[in-house]
Image (cartoon, rainbow, N blue to C red; front, side):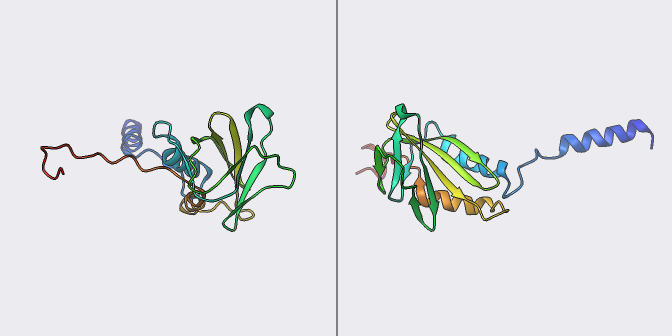
Length: 160
Protein backbone atom coordinates (compact mmCIF):
# COMPACT_ATOMS: atom_id res chain seq x y z
CA UNK A 1 0.00 0.00 0.00
CA UNK A 2 1.25 3.44 -0.76
CA UNK A 3 0.83 6.52 1.40
CA UNK A 4 -2.17 7.72 -0.68
CA UNK A 5 -4.04 4.52 0.16
CA UNK A 6 -3.19 4.85 3.87
CA UNK A 7 -4.35 8.47 3.89
CA UNK A 8 -7.58 7.50 2.14
CA UNK A 9 -8.26 4.72 4.65
CA UNK A 10 -7.53 6.99 7.62
CA UNK A 11 -9.81 9.77 6.31
CA UNK A 12 -12.56 7.28 5.45
CA UNK A 13 -12.47 5.82 8.95
CA UNK A 14 -12.61 9.28 10.53
CA UNK A 15 -15.61 10.33 8.42
CA UNK A 16 -17.52 7.09 9.01
CA UNK A 17 -17.01 6.98 12.79
CA UNK A 18 -19.89 8.38 14.87
CA UNK A 19 -19.28 11.57 16.82
CA UNK A 20 -17.66 10.88 20.15
CA UNK A 21 -20.12 10.77 23.00
CA UNK A 22 -19.02 11.63 26.52
CA UNK A 23 -18.16 8.59 28.61
CA UNK A 24 -20.95 7.39 30.90
CA UNK A 25 -20.32 8.74 34.39
CA UNK A 26 -18.05 11.51 33.12
CA UNK A 27 -18.47 15.18 33.97
CA UNK A 28 -19.40 15.95 30.36
CA UNK A 29 -22.00 13.15 30.20
CA UNK A 30 -23.61 14.35 33.44
CA UNK A 31 -23.69 17.96 32.26
CA UNK A 32 -25.14 16.92 28.89
CA UNK A 33 -27.86 14.80 30.52
CA UNK A 34 -28.87 17.62 32.88
CA UNK A 35 -28.91 20.22 30.11
CA UNK A 36 -31.05 17.97 27.94
CA UNK A 37 -33.48 17.10 30.71
CA UNK A 38 -33.77 20.35 32.64
CA UNK A 39 -32.53 23.20 30.44
CA UNK A 40 -32.68 22.55 26.69
CA UNK A 41 -36.44 22.49 26.26
CA UNK A 42 -37.47 26.13 25.91
CA UNK A 43 -37.18 27.59 29.42
CA UNK A 44 -38.26 24.50 31.30
CA UNK A 45 -39.79 25.24 34.64
CA UNK A 46 -38.84 23.01 37.56
CA UNK A 47 -41.12 21.53 40.19
CA UNK A 48 -39.68 20.95 43.64
CA UNK A 49 -40.17 17.34 44.79
CA UNK A 50 -38.78 17.61 48.32
CA UNK A 51 -39.26 20.05 51.19
CA UNK A 52 -36.81 22.54 52.62
CA UNK A 53 -35.21 24.32 49.64
CA UNK A 54 -33.89 27.54 51.15
CA UNK A 55 -33.55 30.48 48.77
CA UNK A 56 -32.12 33.94 49.30
CA UNK A 57 -32.95 37.26 47.71
CA UNK A 58 -30.98 37.96 44.52
CA UNK A 59 -30.24 41.48 45.73
CA UNK A 60 -28.35 40.13 48.74
CA UNK A 61 -25.55 38.83 46.52
CA UNK A 62 -25.25 35.82 48.85
CA UNK A 63 -26.36 32.27 48.19
CA UNK A 64 -26.20 29.66 50.92
CA UNK A 65 -25.85 26.07 49.73
CA UNK A 66 -28.55 23.47 50.17
CA UNK A 67 -26.96 20.05 50.60
CA UNK A 68 -28.89 17.02 49.34
CA UNK A 69 -27.91 13.88 51.19
CA UNK A 70 -29.80 10.85 52.48
CA UNK A 71 -32.99 12.04 50.81
CA UNK A 72 -33.06 15.45 52.55
CA UNK A 73 -32.11 19.04 51.82
CA UNK A 74 -30.18 20.64 54.67
CA UNK A 75 -28.43 23.98 55.18
CA UNK A 76 -25.87 25.45 57.52
CA UNK A 77 -27.22 27.18 60.63
CA UNK A 78 -26.25 30.66 59.43
CA UNK A 79 -28.31 30.55 56.25
CA UNK A 80 -30.59 33.58 55.99
CA UNK A 81 -33.74 32.46 54.26
CA UNK A 82 -36.02 34.62 52.19
CA UNK A 83 -38.07 31.76 50.83
CA UNK A 84 -38.51 28.16 51.92
CA UNK A 85 -39.69 25.86 49.15
CA UNK A 86 -41.94 22.90 49.83
CA UNK A 87 -42.60 19.80 47.74
CA UNK A 88 -44.87 20.44 44.76
CA UNK A 89 -43.84 24.08 44.57
CA UNK A 90 -42.93 25.47 41.18
CA UNK A 91 -42.40 29.15 42.11
CA UNK A 92 -41.27 29.63 38.52
CA UNK A 93 -38.08 27.74 39.35
CA UNK A 94 -35.49 27.25 36.66
CA UNK A 95 -31.99 25.85 36.47
CA UNK A 96 -29.40 28.51 35.64
CA UNK A 97 -26.04 26.81 36.13
CA UNK A 98 -24.63 23.28 36.24
CA UNK A 99 -21.21 22.73 37.79
CA UNK A 100 -19.94 19.13 37.82
CA UNK A 101 -16.89 18.77 40.06
CA UNK A 102 -14.89 15.76 41.22
CA UNK A 103 -16.47 16.19 44.67
CA UNK A 104 -20.06 16.58 43.50
CA UNK A 105 -22.67 18.37 41.46
CA UNK A 106 -23.73 21.96 42.18
CA UNK A 107 -26.90 23.34 40.60
CA UNK A 108 -27.86 27.00 40.74
CA UNK A 109 -31.59 27.63 40.71
CA UNK A 110 -33.57 30.86 40.36
CA UNK A 111 -37.18 31.41 41.38
CA UNK A 112 -39.72 34.15 40.69
CA UNK A 113 -36.93 36.33 39.25
CA UNK A 114 -35.98 37.41 42.77
CA UNK A 115 -34.74 34.31 44.63
CA UNK A 116 -31.74 32.05 44.14
CA UNK A 117 -30.30 28.92 45.67
CA UNK A 118 -27.59 26.38 45.08
CA UNK A 119 -28.17 22.69 45.59
CA UNK A 120 -25.15 20.46 46.15
CA UNK A 121 -25.20 16.73 45.48
CA UNK A 122 -21.97 15.28 46.92
CA UNK A 123 -20.30 12.36 45.15
CA UNK A 124 -18.61 9.46 46.94
CA UNK A 125 -15.00 10.37 47.66
CA UNK A 126 -12.83 10.06 44.57
CA UNK A 127 -15.53 8.65 42.30
CA UNK A 128 -17.91 10.27 39.82
CA UNK A 129 -21.07 8.11 39.81
CA UNK A 130 -22.75 6.82 36.65
CA UNK A 131 -24.92 9.34 34.83
CA UNK A 132 -28.09 7.38 35.66
CA UNK A 133 -27.30 7.62 39.39
CA UNK A 134 -26.86 11.40 39.17
CA UNK A 135 -30.09 11.66 37.18
CA UNK A 136 -31.88 9.69 39.92
CA UNK A 137 -30.47 11.96 42.70
CA UNK A 138 -31.45 15.17 40.91
CA UNK A 139 -34.83 13.64 40.04
CA UNK A 140 -35.51 13.18 43.77
CA UNK A 141 -35.32 16.96 44.21
CA UNK A 142 -36.56 18.42 40.90
CA UNK A 143 -38.95 17.42 38.15
CA UNK A 144 -40.14 19.11 35.01
CA UNK A 145 -43.88 19.54 34.70
CA UNK A 146 -45.60 17.42 32.12
CA UNK A 147 -46.69 19.33 29.03
CA UNK A 148 -50.39 20.19 29.04
CA UNK A 149 -52.55 17.55 27.38
CA UNK A 150 -54.31 18.55 24.23
CA UNK A 151 -58.04 18.51 24.49
CA UNK A 152 -59.93 16.80 21.73
CA UNK A 153 -62.01 19.13 19.59
CA UNK A 154 -65.65 18.38 19.03
CA UNK A 155 -66.37 16.74 15.71
CA UNK A 156 -63.24 14.60 15.85
CA UNK A 157 -63.29 10.92 16.68
CA UNK A 158 -62.85 10.38 20.39
CA UNK A 159 -63.97 13.91 21.27
CA UNK A 160 -66.54 14.23 23.99
